[in-house]
Image 1 (tube, one colour):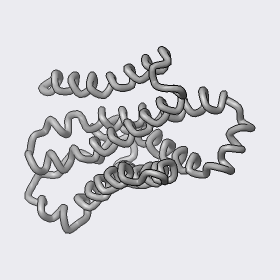
Image 2 (cartoon, helix red, strand yellow; image 1 turned 90 degrees about the vertical axis):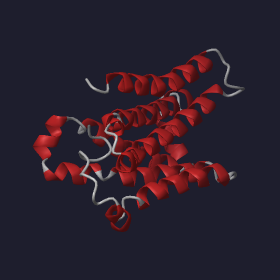
Image 3 (spheres, one colour; image 1 turned 180 degrees about the vertical axis):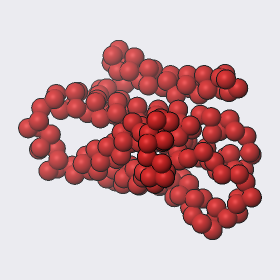
Image 4 (cartoon, one colour; image 1 turned 135 degrees about the horizontal axis):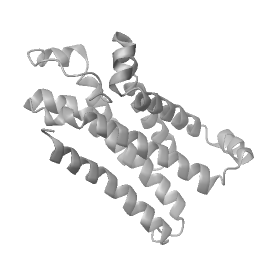
Length: 205
């Protein structure tokens, strides 16, 4: 209740880009190949949301404002939603739901499999991000949700394979991801050891 307005603002901010891009795609306002443009934007949007999700804990440790933690689960779920839309656009508009074409694509573009694996990890985290799963899994729940770091690495690798011709943008996101991972290393965590422990991992609430 305390952070209802803040949660609402974050929800709207995460929702608007996807609605805008889908609207532009329907109106053929995304260039000569709207499906590929929408695919790229949703994929990048998912990566950005995942990085923002992972930045909530460092921001909380720095400022001690619990508002960061209040929206962490929501942001994690939005990252999964964008990744899922990314996959659906590929399956429907680029593949035409053709399994044979998928097999051909996998032979030429193995990074698709890397992206699918990352999506599977995010799916597991999204499904188990509720309090019921937290209680049922106990200590195993926290270990499970640390696999979000593996998902981040897979997504960055997926992006690297896609944009090999222009690595500057990829390098920016890769460095941000590396920084967020380093901030969770024991040495850097010890610098904030005086701060109280946060509730769970990135997809928790």
